[in-house]
Image 1 (cartoon, rainbow, N blue to C red):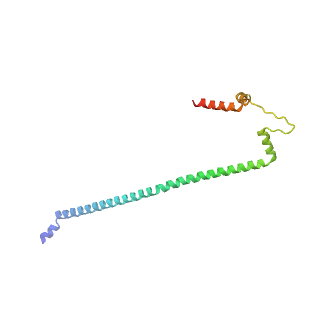
Image 2: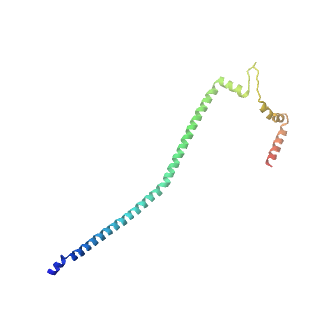
Image 3: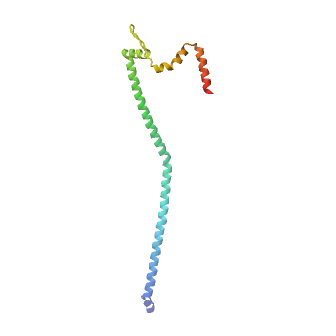
Length: 158
Protein backbone atom coordinates (compact mmCIF):
# COMPACT_ATOMS: atom_id res chain seq x y z
CA UNK A 1 0.00 0.00 0.00
CA UNK A 2 2.90 2.23 0.59
CA UNK A 3 3.84 1.97 -3.09
CA UNK A 4 0.34 2.90 -4.01
CA UNK A 5 0.37 5.92 -1.70
CA UNK A 6 3.76 6.86 -3.00
CA UNK A 7 2.45 6.49 -6.49
CA UNK A 8 -0.52 8.69 -5.58
CA UNK A 9 1.70 11.53 -4.41
CA UNK A 10 4.26 11.33 -7.20
CA UNK A 11 4.60 14.31 -9.49
CA UNK A 12 3.82 12.36 -12.62
CA UNK A 13 0.64 10.99 -11.12
CA UNK A 14 -0.40 14.39 -9.86
CA UNK A 15 0.26 15.96 -13.26
CA UNK A 16 -1.67 13.21 -15.01
CA UNK A 17 -4.64 13.67 -12.64
CA UNK A 18 -4.44 17.43 -13.01
CA UNK A 19 -4.45 17.08 -16.82
CA UNK A 20 -7.44 14.76 -16.71
CA UNK A 21 -9.33 17.13 -14.43
CA UNK A 22 -8.45 20.10 -16.63
CA UNK A 23 -9.48 18.20 -19.76
CA UNK A 24 -12.76 17.23 -18.09
CA UNK A 25 -13.40 20.87 -17.11
CA UNK A 26 -12.59 22.12 -20.63
CA UNK A 27 -14.79 19.46 -22.16
CA UNK A 28 -17.64 20.32 -19.79
CA UNK A 29 -17.32 24.05 -20.48
CA UNK A 30 -17.21 23.43 -24.24
CA UNK A 31 -20.31 21.27 -24.12
CA UNK A 32 -22.05 23.88 -21.96
CA UNK A 33 -21.10 26.63 -24.46
CA UNK A 34 -22.23 24.51 -27.36
CA UNK A 35 -25.44 23.70 -25.55
CA UNK A 36 -25.94 27.41 -24.81
CA UNK A 37 -25.17 28.32 -28.42
CA UNK A 38 -27.51 25.72 -29.82
CA UNK A 39 -30.22 26.74 -27.36
CA UNK A 40 -29.68 30.40 -28.24
CA UNK A 41 -29.81 29.62 -31.94
CA UNK A 42 -33.05 27.72 -31.49
CA UNK A 43 -34.50 30.56 -29.45
CA UNK A 44 -33.35 33.09 -32.00
CA UNK A 45 -34.92 31.07 -34.81
CA UNK A 46 -38.18 30.82 -32.90
CA UNK A 47 -38.12 34.54 -32.14
CA UNK A 48 -37.44 35.33 -35.79
CA UNK A 49 -40.30 33.06 -36.85
CA UNK A 50 -42.68 34.74 -34.40
CA UNK A 51 -41.62 38.20 -35.55
CA UNK A 52 -42.05 37.28 -39.21
CA UNK A 53 -45.47 35.85 -38.46
CA UNK A 54 -46.47 39.07 -36.70
CA UNK A 55 -45.23 41.19 -39.58
CA UNK A 56 -47.13 39.09 -42.11
CA UNK A 57 -50.24 39.05 -39.96
CA UNK A 58 -50.19 42.83 -39.40
CA UNK A 59 -49.11 43.94 -42.89
CA UNK A 60 -52.57 43.84 -44.52
CA UNK A 61 -54.47 45.48 -41.64
CA UNK A 62 -51.85 48.23 -41.45
CA UNK A 63 -52.11 48.83 -45.20
CA UNK A 64 -55.89 49.02 -44.88
CA UNK A 65 -55.60 51.41 -41.93
CA UNK A 66 -53.26 53.75 -43.82
CA UNK A 67 -55.44 53.75 -46.95
CA UNK A 68 -58.59 54.38 -44.91
CA UNK A 69 -56.92 57.27 -43.08
CA UNK A 70 -55.99 58.79 -46.45
CA UNK A 71 -59.55 58.30 -47.67
CA UNK A 72 -60.93 59.92 -44.52
CA UNK A 73 -58.68 62.95 -44.95
CA UNK A 74 -59.77 63.28 -48.61
CA UNK A 75 -63.43 63.12 -47.61
CA UNK A 76 -62.89 65.73 -44.89
CA UNK A 77 -61.22 68.01 -47.44
CA UNK A 78 -64.13 67.52 -49.86
CA UNK A 79 -66.59 68.25 -47.06
CA UNK A 80 -64.77 71.48 -46.23
CA UNK A 81 -64.79 72.51 -49.90
CA UNK A 82 -68.51 71.71 -50.16
CA UNK A 83 -69.27 73.81 -47.08
CA UNK A 84 -67.35 76.74 -48.56
CA UNK A 85 -69.26 76.36 -51.82
CA UNK A 86 -72.59 76.28 -49.94
CA UNK A 87 -71.64 79.50 -48.14
CA UNK A 88 -70.72 81.14 -51.45
CA UNK A 89 -74.04 80.10 -52.96
CA UNK A 90 -75.95 81.41 -49.93
CA UNK A 91 -74.16 84.74 -50.27
CA UNK A 92 -75.00 84.85 -53.99
CA UNK A 93 -78.63 84.02 -53.27
CA UNK A 94 -78.79 86.78 -50.68
CA UNK A 95 -77.32 89.25 -53.20
CA UNK A 96 -79.90 88.28 -55.81
CA UNK A 97 -82.64 89.02 -53.26
CA UNK A 98 -81.53 92.65 -53.34
CA UNK A 99 -83.38 94.53 -56.12
CA UNK A 100 -80.48 96.90 -56.80
CA UNK A 101 -78.06 94.02 -57.40
CA UNK A 102 -80.56 92.22 -59.64
CA UNK A 103 -81.09 95.40 -61.68
CA UNK A 104 -77.34 95.92 -62.00
CA UNK A 105 -76.79 92.35 -63.23
CA UNK A 106 -79.69 92.53 -65.68
CA UNK A 107 -78.35 95.74 -67.19
CA UNK A 108 -74.82 94.34 -67.36
CA UNK A 109 -75.59 90.88 -68.72
CA UNK A 110 -78.60 91.51 -70.92
CA UNK A 111 -77.71 95.09 -71.96
CA UNK A 112 -81.08 96.43 -70.77
CA UNK A 113 -81.52 100.18 -70.44
CA UNK A 114 -84.03 102.20 -68.51
CA UNK A 115 -86.63 104.20 -70.43
CA UNK A 116 -85.06 107.39 -71.74
CA UNK A 117 -81.47 106.02 -71.68
CA UNK A 118 -79.43 105.23 -74.77
CA UNK A 119 -77.55 101.94 -74.77
CA UNK A 120 -74.15 101.54 -76.39
CA UNK A 121 -72.19 98.35 -76.99
CA UNK A 122 -68.50 98.77 -77.73
CA UNK A 123 -67.15 96.03 -79.98
CA UNK A 124 -63.49 95.05 -80.06
CA UNK A 125 -62.13 95.54 -83.62
CA UNK A 126 -60.23 92.23 -83.44
CA UNK A 127 -63.38 90.40 -82.45
CA UNK A 128 -65.31 92.12 -85.24
CA UNK A 129 -63.01 90.58 -87.88
CA UNK A 130 -63.61 87.12 -86.51
CA UNK A 131 -67.36 87.57 -86.33
CA UNK A 132 -67.77 88.64 -90.00
CA UNK A 133 -68.28 85.02 -90.96
CA UNK A 134 -70.86 84.76 -88.18
CA UNK A 135 -72.67 87.84 -89.59
CA UNK A 136 -72.73 86.31 -93.05
CA UNK A 137 -74.18 83.13 -91.54
CA UNK A 138 -76.84 85.15 -89.75
CA UNK A 139 -78.21 86.54 -93.02
CA UNK A 140 -78.53 83.14 -94.70
CA UNK A 141 -81.43 80.73 -94.23
CA UNK A 142 -81.04 78.39 -91.26
CA UNK A 143 -80.98 75.20 -93.33
CA UNK A 144 -77.99 76.50 -95.31
CA UNK A 145 -76.07 76.93 -92.07
CA UNK A 146 -76.90 73.37 -91.03
CA UNK A 147 -75.64 71.94 -94.32
CA UNK A 148 -72.46 74.01 -94.09
CA UNK A 149 -71.87 72.61 -90.60
CA UNK A 150 -72.35 69.06 -91.87
CA UNK A 151 -69.97 69.69 -94.78
CA UNK A 152 -67.34 71.18 -92.45
CA UNK A 153 -67.52 68.29 -90.01
CA UNK A 154 -67.32 65.79 -92.87
CA UNK A 155 -64.26 67.58 -94.28
CA UNK A 156 -62.51 67.62 -90.89
CA UNK A 157 -62.88 63.82 -90.52
CA UNK A 158 -60.91 63.16 -93.74
